[in-house]
Image (cartoon, rainbow, N blue to C red; front, side):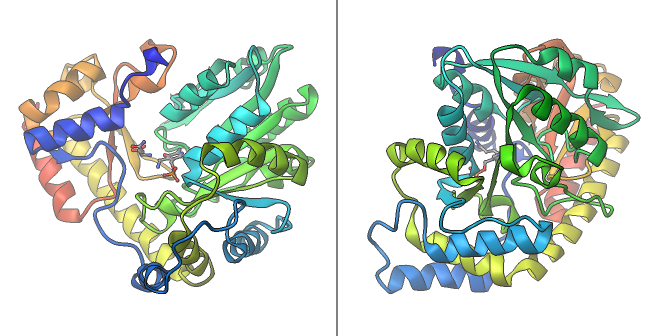
Length: 379
Ligand code: PMP
Ligand code: GLN
């Protein structure tokens, strides 16, 4: 694991703390989640919910997740056998990759990829193959031929993150159809990371890959409470999949952490059942923040890509005369008092992403305004 070192999120958040710069790097909201949900967690602690919960998760949360998948997407999962709870989506993805890919197997990821994917593929002893997302008419997408060319005899899994961090793309039915075709033709399993499932804009619909023809049977879907309810520190996630995959993934998960903290499971179950109106307000407010950040970045001279989902904007730094996002991100606190994430660390083909930095907009309006005012001095 030596090549992995410290994550870019830890490095850039530490830089923000050290310099006092505005942190638009690591994605975490600066306002609290729904009050009643927080009270459920407090009450669970007060009432002594302190011991190990069941390994697969509290039945209440597994039932709430099954109900959510059914109501929102028409996907049916048996809460007893096809849903289980993980320490955030991060553990859900990790346990899935460790369970389903072995040494020498190949795993396809779309780059830029979320950093933990590369690390966990390495932990599994597997090999990652990347398919590059590139901007076409303002939106990041992939070339279907590149995806087909990435498949080989050892390919086992494809990791699909939509809405996509950091590119902001929400895969269309057509794009998902291409992925589904490849999975069916080559007998691949898909692991989907849907943590931004509610955070889509301008009426863009999040379509779970599992809803496509023949895909429920070969898809392991992962999501979590962190983004949906603005509690990224709770690390409470879940996996839904056919029972045989759930058994495999759970066999791994039980030796990573055995179980997931009980009070937050209780609260996440409550929130899934009762706080979706709150989430809709969050979504609307984030759409405004997205537009606010983009106007500011454009005024400051960046080329900004308007995301269809997530709370991140990709900004091209070349119009400002910079070429290396890593150099700029490390210098940005001094130059402008702002922290961003250099997107190139999420690429194998670094040249495809060298000129992007990622800004988060899950922040109070006044924080975004101050950050873009500072960035305007860059030019
Ligand atoms: N996947 C993606 C794409 C993410 O952006 C994040 C970060 N929040 C996670 C997974 C991690 O989710 P969790 O905190 O639930 O582990
Ligand atoms: N998902 C968050 C982001 O992309 C970071 C999570 C982390 O720090 N690992 O900013």
